[in-house]
Length: 286
Image 1 (cartoon, helix red, strand yellow):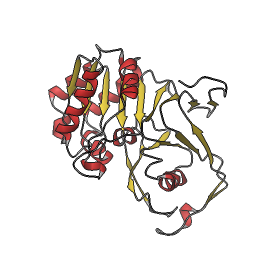
Image 2 (cartoon, one colour):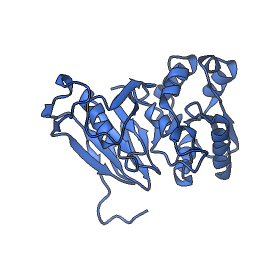
Image 3 (cartoon, helix red, strand yellow):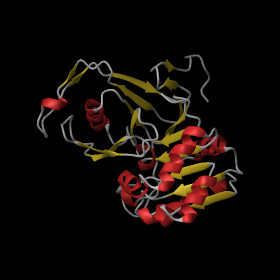
């Protein structure tokens, strides 16, 4: 596994009230505590921050929401890059902003829009190169923006279904962290079944279910949990029974010996060797 110099910060989401209940139409809001970590990792309030609301169906409103949130934290150099097509990804302004950014922040919404309109473009290649080779370069994303970081990306699927083959839809993401499959709003929306099917399809990968107001700081093949909620880790390396490949779509599945861990603020996980470091019980709550 290549030593990566940059930092990823996937966040589980925490939307504010928008014009409709559906996630595609709501404004995403990130708790200031998590945004503080994003700014800190990017180098502080003088950092160049680029917000990309491509996933949202209301990108102008979402962009303004992030401008307000980052300005509240004292950030002075925040730009919104409103990409709605592949052509928008190839503009000189887009390339310049991504080349000069200390942090790129992807909003929530529909992760497939990120893959379709940014995946494979020049700015996608710039993001990959800078993330691999530049210390202090941060790529953050909430909800859809977090899920798009994976190579095997969950594109949708019913959370209300039981563990049914075909309930989860997979799609190619941005491949920033190919070792992981990321799901968000995990606890509130009951997405245990769909990430379990994703791991049944790709048992060599690690599944992460991020609760709202919860994120990860991923550096050097390790992550630390930040925020107020939990992260559930799904490790399928030692699965003993997995009938996904032999069942018809719509059939209930079974999966045995999949290891899970529940981690919270300050806990750490090594993606390479799967070791866990949890805060001692006597540690004070921060």
